[in-house]
Image 1 (cartoon, rainbow, N blue to C red):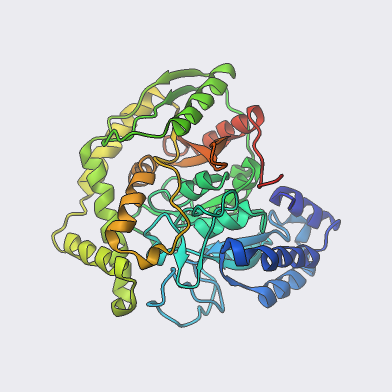
Image 2 (image 1 turned 45 degrees about the vertical axis):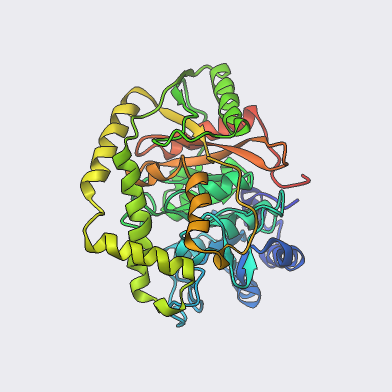
Length: 442
């Protein structure tokens, strides 16, 4: 089993491990397993080895937080000499001349960028397939690894790399984390600053890992905040738990709600105050995220050749452009929802919900299906996640149990702005009380 990022970095810092050897081993795992897993759109074999060789000569090697750690980077961010395809053949084919903020921070921290992970076109869907591959769930390959950071989740869950970068616009880190039995955290607004605000400010960069410590370490690098890597168990908290689907009240499978019950039992046993409670979500908040789900990708598609977009995406973009034209994306909708969320978190420190509204979709060539065939499973599975993107609140998914199908079950933890360290502490407490398998077969 692959070592954790924390373990690998310490071993490389001390000289116990050679970063070139670490990279070679990661590339060998990818070569052996990724033809089945489908995690990577592109593997940077020669480039990664060159990065690892250069890393050996860095005078600050012993101080680099991700020294020699192989990492998958979601195919949405600028990397020098690469192009970010966003799961599409319709975008700019020119190679980036320089690193963007994310790649630059990862390199500065000593990480080795071994590949670009697979995403659905324009990151619209919670299933990550492209014409040249399908990101499969390493626990049960007949199921999707999720999306839109599905390739990143598959790479970590399969043990190809210890950590991966992702982005989360409506659950795109938390959904694949839950499906693949990982820790996945979406920080609050402006914690990880980037060159742009995707999906009208709803999208955030986050981390996927098999342990809380690894997720915290990667997030600390992405955010440029070393304090986030220091995870401490919190004192007594006011914990709210809810298994009711926001607004729609759609039925949620019992084994998914049972994961919330288990988390509540564990946290109550640890001394926290636990009660059943939920925010007043409101239909307006749901309308706010749906409008941005359409309009955000449509805005990005302004720079794409629309004739080359997949049929499902063209439909999505057409609707999004209509919503943009009529000014449906309103700041007031967001502010109204934030006001209700603030009222709720004035009385509670953490909210625990299911991470998923349904079991994961099957691993299929979803890009060949029409818009409605993609939208129905997408909306159903993402029931609990998107509202926290609209609010800009930090949220994460933590493994809690296993479904009878063999798939992992995750719970979502949510806190008020600035609560990233709090969430990581609660997650670490759950990890201690209820340890999970890091990868299938571990």
